[in-house]
Image (cartoon, rainbow, N blue to C red; front, top):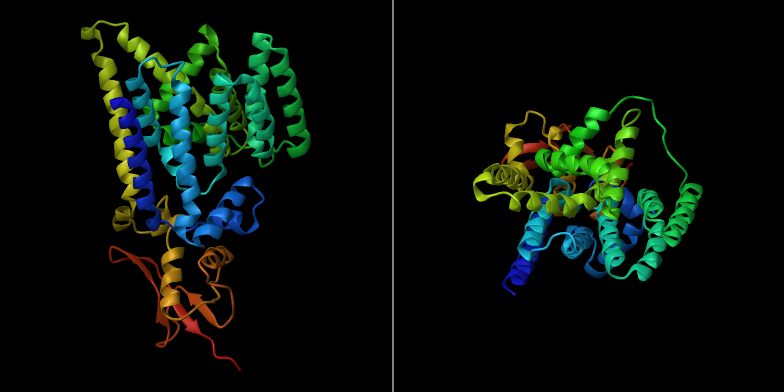
Length: 396
């Protein structure tokens, strides 16, 4: 009972920290594109949220936080057949919520958060209600085209297990996916292999990605090869193969690689406990180092605005695209301005979410044009991040 209370306390703290972080973020151009022009299922969730709570940052990101909490709880349930002790599963949950890619998808309006939730839901049902999970598997076709990775993995798994029903269903869904979505391998051929490995290390943190890679590699040759292995292995292999000729959208593949987390934790605790206490020291050291790096990353992510103080060009900060727009809209409204020529279509679309329409009466510029211009420069910790001045164009 105490461990269950610890689990729910962890989930509550995680959700609370994420919600407290929402006011520091503004809608990005990519998120604005999804909100106004997207066709993804995620857009329906966001529109439903904003219809209930209004067009603001909380309504925009609350669905992602709820999906994240649901995903975390599903991971805990998924790990039960693989990780015997409940306290070990809570360690897995703690590491999961600290992963850089997970903490990002918990706030960013991106398909990765929805895909990860849907994947975990299917995997839990696959373990506990196999027949019902097949219906969910077919519905995943409508969620996101990246589920063709899952269909490919299950096709290979079913072939190994000689499961005719799963093989046939996966084959039909995979064929339908190729027909409906097509296959995009466009772009100028250019190797991005090392970049992709680097991005994986950022999403998972270097030590944890190395260990996940090792577990997948080891099971490829020594087994056992469960469905979780096939899902992670196919996603990792396809992404690395594609990276030899083009840039890979890691948000498409990373959710499936995360399916190997229970296997990695299972292998770690097994290796740890079969050894005498005197020989467990190196495992404790590596675990402590990995956990420390995750905690440091979390601190950087949640206090990243202080990094602006050390940058000559604020636009170089990794989160810059998620700043400015909301603060700028608030400043414009404080001066009674509800429409403006923002000078760039990206900023115009972002401001539109906050109720600032595009028009020609006011012009936003990075330099002062006259003494009558209104200074709406965005500053964080007194440092100018986005120089901006509003010029009123007289009507003839």
